[in-house]
Image (cartoon, rainbow, N blue to C red; front, side, top):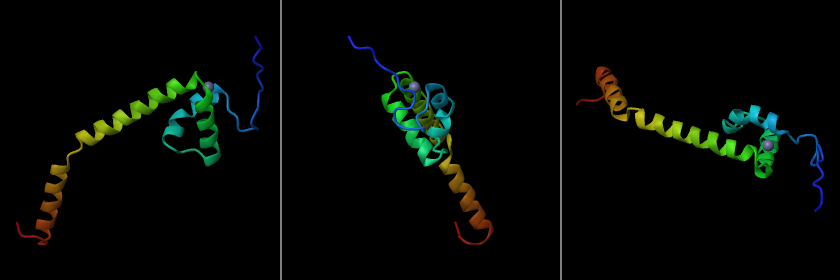
Length: 94
Ligand SMILES: [Zn+2]
């Protein structure tokens, strides 16, 4: 069995360690990082068995949060407020 040799920077200086990836994971999910950093984190997640589950967890958490916000928003109420404002301005007759 061959020993797995670890290189610190096998693909250049943008290779990140797990700690750096974890610290930037939310920013990554919000796409608030530079394109270089986004790519570096993406490639780390693609090959890191330790970070990827955490990424999946946080991503599904954000997706659920988005969905909850959409479900709790009130499009009918908004429509009424807009219609009321237009009525007040004499724009529509209802
Ligand atoms: Zn990692």
